[in-house]
Length: 298
Image 1: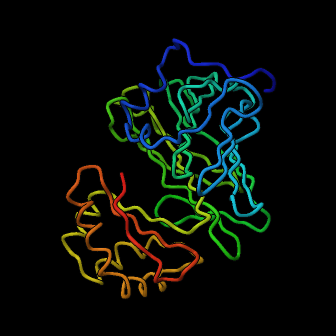
Image 2: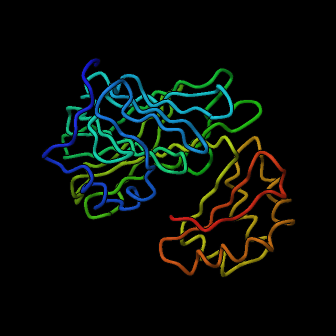
Image 3: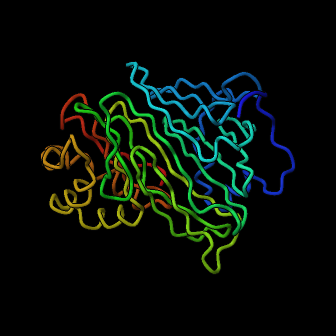
């Protein structure tokens, strides 16, 4: 699909922003304050501290993410891009593509450089499989991270992380979903036709370009458990199993031994606050002494 500039959202059968807010309100938090245009080739062309993100008007072009410090980039193809409409501006940092099949693809650019590529599923007749073809940098591979997500890396660094998928119905109830990888095409399977599912359903692969390092965010429940069991052994088990190659969990164990005393306050603060989670940040530069824990939105 080519041609035409982006349109602006009108009164469609499903209000996209309302659907996102009902299913997962955090999707609309911390959205990047970037120009979101209704004309030209790019609906969003954003330079953020951690990455450069371009979101096209024509969905067939795909979303491009590039490090601001190198020429390495990769492209995330969008589901049903050959049939989908041109981009519609929903809000600053948010556009949508009507897939013409009862589903809508809704990229949300976040201030931290990640992109949530939501799918709003209107009814039981919509597809259950959503393909994301990935064009990787030369020499890069994509592998499972052990938590339901994937890591894109080359021989020297992790380039990006794709978080484990989630899907929620209109009442915020979890809908079963998982990824399947075929070559370099990542498919999200959303089992939205199960009994009791309320439409619209929102499903979300979140892609983080981690040119600075690796970030591991726990759930709030995991954060509370960590705060209540604040010992080196427990912290190592909670964080280090999620550290992907090439950093390895040996380095994480060393970091726990060196930095543990600085992590207690952000972990316990996050545990005491609703909707907050502990996040381990492991920069590529500076070694394990630069690793830190922050209190983040879940």
